[in-house]
Image 1 (spheres, rainbow, N blue to C red):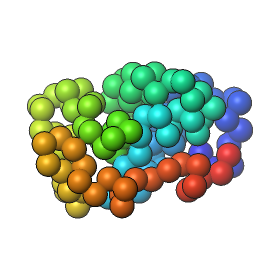
Image 2 (image 1 turned 45 degrees about the vertical axis):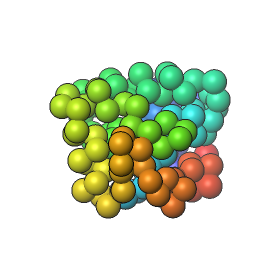
Image 3 (image 1 turned 45 degrees about the horizontal axis):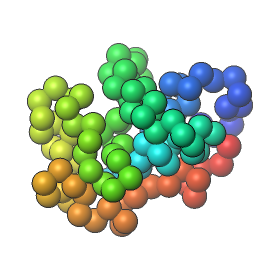
Image 4 (image 1 turned 90 degrees about the horizontal axis):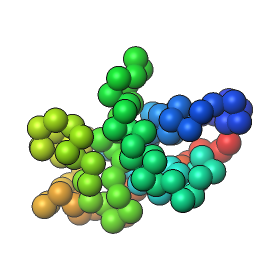
Length: 116
């Protein structure tokens, strides 16, 4: 998202660009992404955008976006119920009962990590 004017990019593309910046082994939240792109009340819309991301030509690591408590609330959109969990566990994220146990350690806040 760096070096691009966010005014010229539609909402979904903004979501995809921020999500692509989330590093391997880290996660962000729907709300954190919504706040970063200037739509703080649009956390659900971020989730909807990520649900549509599977058709993008460039990979969008939607599995790295969870709810504000570290719950894998979007897992049903990955086909098999364990895909999201498996993808995160392959990145060394610790999960139990669909919740990230080390959430504070792996949380990636776009406000702290990126600049518009």
